[in-house]
Amino acid sequence: MGGRKKLGAFVLTISVGLLLIAVYVGLAHRDSVLALAVSPRQLLIATCAVVVLGACWIWVVIASHKLIRPVSMTYTGRLAGSMVVGLLCFAIAVPTTVAAQTVMAQRDLVGSVFQSEGNSKSATRPKVTNAKDPWEKIPRLNLLLLGADDGIGRTGVRTDTVIVASIDTKTGNTALISLSRNWMRMPFPAGSPLHKVFPDGFWDPSLGNVEQPEYYLDAMYDNIPKKYPGVLGATDNEGADAVKLAASAALGLDISYYMQVNLAGFRQIIDALGGITVNVNYRVPIGGDYGQGPGTNGHKLPSSYIEPGANRKLDGYHALWFARGRYGLSDPSRQERQRCTIHALVNSANPQALVTSYTEIANAGKQLLRTDIPGDILGAFVQLALKVKSAKVTSIDLNKDKNFPTGKNPDYAAMQQIIQKSLNPVATTPTAKPTKPTSGATKKPTPGKTTPTPGTAQNLSDACAYNPNETGTGN
Image 1 (cartoon, one colour):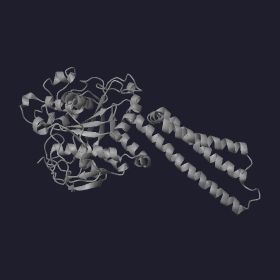
Image 2 (spheres, one colour; image 1 turned 135 degrees about the vertical axis):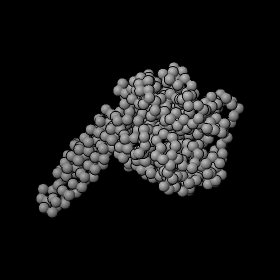
Image 3 (spheres, helix red, strand yellow; image 1 turned 135 degrees about the horizontal axis):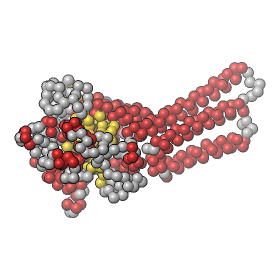
Image 4 (cartoon, helix red, strand yellow; image 1 turned 30 degrees about the horizontal axis):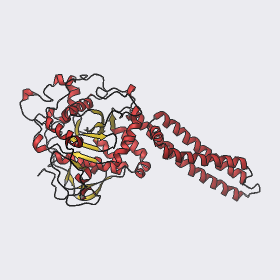
């Protein structure tokens, strides 16, 4: 319209070309996009590119207005035209700024949480030999998930939540294995320095065969670094490395990495996602303390309860207590709720929530996450996470009644047999046929939740279904 046809054709060609390139890369080269999303250097370049594109777009609007504006336009017309141009520029600047802030938030998160292998220290993680395909020779990747309870008024840090996620690197199918917080005699691998300190497991034989809260699994993270600093050598998180070694030996699994979440900050992530939806089968206490064990503040009754109900939408505060509440309830019931919380969190991480709240999610994640996963293989981890998102998630029952009726002397050898049988069903039961999902696997609540046979794997959709007959006490 302004007579600059060549310039107009050039700008239009560039705009359409960039759009087509973006669509093509997003559909055909998803790996490249994911690699960019976890590379601080490429994210900085992307931020600059977003700002430059926004500035060019604004220049096109202003230049176009100058070309087509009549020379004899009245003052009122000039003012109206300037206001329209200003609004258009504002409409361009806002999403450009938001996009740049989101990319920088991602860069800050990646740089803060995931250090490169050369810039971090670990006494237990494997050495990266193939950053592009680190799972080339690893059929199953085992991750240690730690929930650290270091809230106000507590002494030290307790890992009340200890879960091992065993992921099939080909399919993404994941098995979750919960470890009880009061397990004693946790073993260490024979070649570990901690095995020399605790040849018979993490406990004190001089105290006798009694409950020893300072030697529970949840006390290991804090007590070993205090009593034996530097025993494992160079590491950025000696407590996490100690728990990783013990969990590996107890469950008979080679655990590669850990991911630690501060439970007090966990609620920030859930609030940023807009909450999670879970089935509450029985009253879950908010607060309460038995007055026994490490970190206690004395006996205290719960301040309130989360009431039962199907498809309950919980904010971060109530979701945190849904996962950790235990006053008057059994440890296995709390472990199941923790697995259900993870399951609900994965299901809640939809694209809309991630896009609209990503800055808040990134800021919260930067404060509450610790890990020894090196930034060098983050691209491969993102690919694996996408598989997990759409794959089957199960829970492995370690048979509490038989293998750890109390925490004093668990039968770790029997647990290892259960785990191997669940993770390798073809090798151990070649004639077994896959079972059809039960009605509890649907999204609609069903009162007929099935009870798994002890020592078997159970689909989490079924395990987390609504069943008002449950009590949470183990009875």
